[in-house]
Length: 285
Image (tube, rainbow, N blue to C red; front, side, top):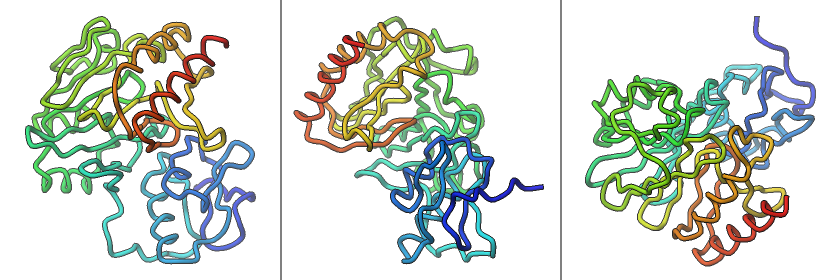
């Protein structure tokens, strides 16, 4: 029996049921259409344009609990829903896994071998798209929480799997282990940067001095319009996370793509200034 409709959703065909775990993923792909109320995601209004219908379908496919629903059978738009291109050569995968509490994962096309950053749930639709895009050479895991079905994608594509040794128990099949706090080049233009704090083995991945895949270590807050870290979800050490983000200010990026929380795109200098400001606030806290 499916969970009941959340009465906080706007009246009409589309709704979100009460099994929602408030991971925020549906809000990130349907901003303004889906909002948070009483620690759940709900429809603020019914989709009224083709773009909003597509956003609603993105919410269907991203939701890890299959909580985004419609009372009647809605036709699926005849366009690709996921992966969703975020910036040139980088896509949000969708199909978020409940095992990762709905965290986002990303695909990056690279001439030296494509990357999968963290893992979505295993979906034939994604496998087909990844294969058409040239497969997956490296799976880059940011930490133990967001491993999901990485093992299945690794087997499917014969991919190397990277994780920090301190979080290796979550992915014992990993082929490459990162050590201590030393940054490492994974492939041309791809850096693995250990940032202990959220977990002991948390890692962020920098792409071409342009994109930072931050796992659960760093995100953007739409409410505060600023960078944030999650103190209430810091499983290892807030002090270590503060120090890690301070060291991260040495690196350049303009796109921030997190596992949880909102993405952000800012000029490099502003991103750096906001990161230093966050570190200062964390030290005071």
